Length: 405
Image 1 (cartoon, helix red, strand yellow):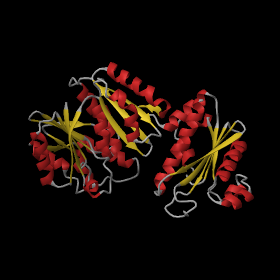
Image 2 (cartoon, one colour; image 1 turned 60 degrees about the vertical axis):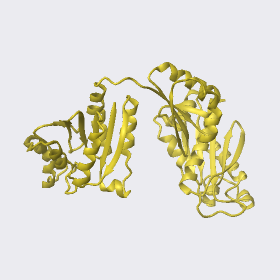
Image 3 (cartoon, helix red, strand yellow; image 1 turned 135 degrees about the vertical axis):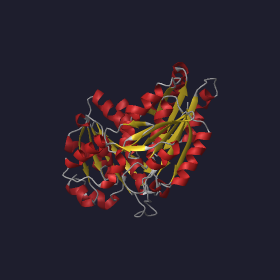
Image 4 (cartoon, one colour; image 1 turned 90 degrees about the vertical axis):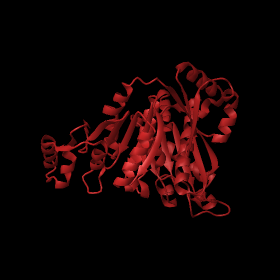
């Protein structure tokens, strides 16, 4: 079943707002067996909206899903343009207007007159309820296509898609698509494909997609039958082994916390260049308090000495970014919080601060466990944000691998 997506918004075109809606809708509909035919973004201007709608309808998709342009401000013209396009009149919904006024009264606010536009409903069309916002959606049938218009606020759009649109599309009798996503870490995309090439060249019959990111490469396997998906994923597991840390949407921190819970292990962190990012990621997981006992952000030499007890002689002889300092940080944080594992990170995040001897991107990660400490040296790039993310990911993956053994 073909679906086309139309996003309306000047803020999307200018780059001020990232179009996360189209990615979420595409992913959600692809998972239930839809084929996304087209994705187009246009400004809040009547002529390009109408021109694009005609273009999309000429391609004959089963559904056109529009997001954006249903707000109360003067630049939100989608409602009127769409009503004119499908040839419907409108009427004012007094009951809904009263509901909106009461909603504003709860916050001791008078409802602006501009919100009256959100109480307009088509005389020939359907309303899509919005459980979390004031901008309701619309559904029309034109030729052989269902046109759906939703607000652009992501939280509102997602609820309306999940509660109204996706169930309706499923009722159209979609052929089921079986998907499995294998999440890998530590192998670049080109090297990964080379590793699994022997099974890729077999007659597996599946569709594969590769989705690289700063954290690793996701491998998405799809087929109309479950058997080929399971067979191919099992073959890939045999090759990649522990380089696959999970499936679906599971995060690396989810896996780490669950492994630590299963083995009744605890963790503490001492962070310098990551500024608490590792601790933040671990505490994003529900139930992480069973595992993560605490952490220290020791950014300066003074805090490394005063809060963590790193020896002054070590810092003076080797510097804050060194194997010796990372070793001391890991050992001391493990002892301070009395945990099974102590993780430390210290490095030069950049883009300034590097030297010929210690360039930007140099990072030391330490791990203390069972009375011994090991430190690994890494060389990342010059982008500060990426360096922090990569450091946190490498540290978490090292902890995962340690927990597996």
